[in-house]
Image (tube, rainbow, N blue to C red):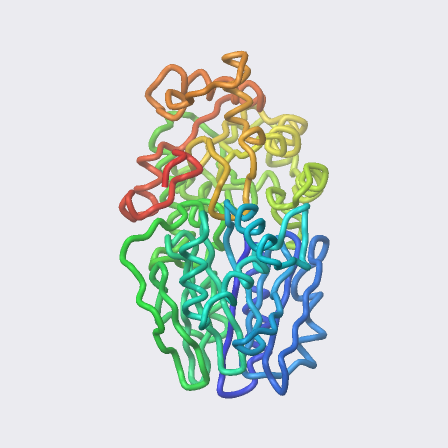
Length: 462
């Protein structure tokens, strides 16, 4: 996951740029960076794996000046600085290119080279920049990127005139424009707006290109109505105060929890969520069931990020173990429903969450996942990269004794195969019961038509 943001103002924009970046911190795993245009184009990138964006960038925010800038929080080093026939510019991207190796090989054969390498692959942002500069203009270059990639990329380009904002052609990720007197901003997360006094004026359409300058916002390329926005934005990725397509994240999660409760006839003492993204699902469950919402597990400070994000299993396990502290007085002898946004690998939920409840004498632990079982690695953003990581595949392989060629029966919640798979995961997690959200209820909680949502990680189809 990653987030991108930009600000253009009639006056100095550094403070707004800094705080816009800070309000994307929940997305960050590895790097945070900014580029700002004042007397010249300046760029700063920091590793934020074990710290926070604001602590790394604060000093720069006090010294750098300019009236236009962009930034990124995510899994690779950005912004990329480019000297080109279009002049100097900086670029940030949000998304994933599934055919990156093919495109990189084509560029290698054409005499190009790459300077930014991570995990033995090229930097996606640098790859995009090299595709853009092959055409006669920035706009033509962006359209060329869209024609070449298999995947999804939204991007921001900063030059001496302003910021180009581009939403990916499929509409998987989001970009929103905000405005206040004399300033305009573009962000992945609208949670950046309220405390900076911006108001949402536009959600970019898929494939739409706009240009932000000190004179305002100009449309450079029409978008399209058809979109496939990522459903996971509401279930897990997004910040509670963010809104996509006019639909708030917290409200969706509350509806999701209520839907989970509607399918249960359990007698419970309390509802709890795995902090932080499971919290609102649990609140919705508790409100519908009219039972107490309590916190048997509390997260120790915002300094511990999402355990799903770090690249290595060892790092994920360490974050998962250290960030949640159990409260025995709330746990002991209680029947608990624990709402989780999703179950990806299942190892952290099993070893560092559920086990803490059992160790502190919970009477029952019922896990409720707010989305269906994850079945396919995401090809549109930096997320789970192999199916072998998914607990669903471990379950199927254990049940069948081999790698199945066709898993369609396990994707249908009405089949015996699906029920056997869920039972296997339930036993593996060591919980009293396990239920997943149905696809129908998840889509209803979000509130968009099914054909407007990307459900690839559950269906394997766009």
